[in-house]
Amino acid sequence: MQKLRQRKQLAQGHAAQRWQMWPMGPVFSGDQGTMAQFVSAFQAAYITIEVLIALVSVPGNILVIWAVKKNQALQDATFSFIVSLAVADVAVGTLVIPLAVVINIGPRMEFYTCLMVACPVLILTESSILALLAIAVDRYLRVKIPLRYKNVVTPRRAAAAIACCWIVSLLVGLTPIFGWNNLNKMRRTQEANASHKAFVIRCQFENVISMEYMVYFNFFVWVLPPLLLMLIIYLEVFNLIRKQLDKKVSSNSSDPQKYYGKELKIAKSLALVLFLFALSWLPLHTLNCITLFCPSCQTPSILTYIAIFLTHGNSAMNPIVYAFRIQKFRTTFLQIWHQYICCETDNTNNLDNTELGNWPLERAGTVPDVPYLDLQKPL
Image (cartoon, rainbow, N blue to C red):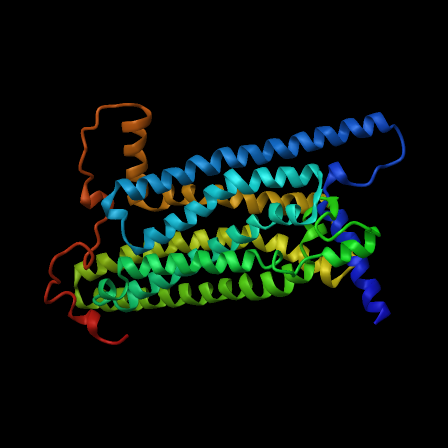
């Protein structure tokens, strides 16, 4: 038991050293003036990169929301979930990144105030994961039950799903405030005699957030399983689409082939969004696991910086993917740019439905009799 306690204390010490970053890191012997200059320059570089990420993320995701609002062809369940994802990414740029800069500086503040500073990133990360999961389920339903999709996925149900995603995200992200935090550990290590409410600490992420919470609860329950589930869903989506494309090619039905061809293209784009999210967040969670399970392991500070920049930078990636991979978004982005940014005369008030990719079974009032009969057969 004593060994286990010592191991946890050692893990906390290494974790705090890793997350405190250079400005709050250890002071080396030598020219103290030179060291202070180096630390200030490093901190300035860190803040500059974070600001640049925010300057790309916020306008880009506002443009996504604007495009969905402007273009009726984008106003369906899938793009409602994309808007929810974009809202979370806007909040990363306007809220999480400024708070990350505060944590980087490491001011002294009351424990629960620091906890409130650290929790928004947990809420928004979970919201993004659940939005991606909702998008994956929506794409699956589109190819599994194309004829009944509009009756199953109604705007009201989509709105309810988005609301549930945010409620769950709040509960998961605010769990440390409900009690799963490092208050007792910090009291033991800092020998504080202050009252519970007046406990003042240097505000650093792992001074307040329990590493057990981050690994066992956040990662192993609310990050990794949804990512694996989404992987399975997209593999099944691609399998269903391939089967339908092979079937329609043999039967010479061009309309269903066009429908499933577009479904394949947009599914690839959204799977790329999922891949980029996993690529951005798994390194930081891996470092958390190393910190918890290998207390004696020393993680290079540069790896921590790269992992943090990846997580924040992910919020700026999605609009770029939409612009290059989804024709509907690209066309609407260009129209917004010419009409509102360049103030050019709008000669295309009504966006071309063909260019925007109005899909069969979605906008048509009736379903053609012959081409879509095979869609009702089991795969």
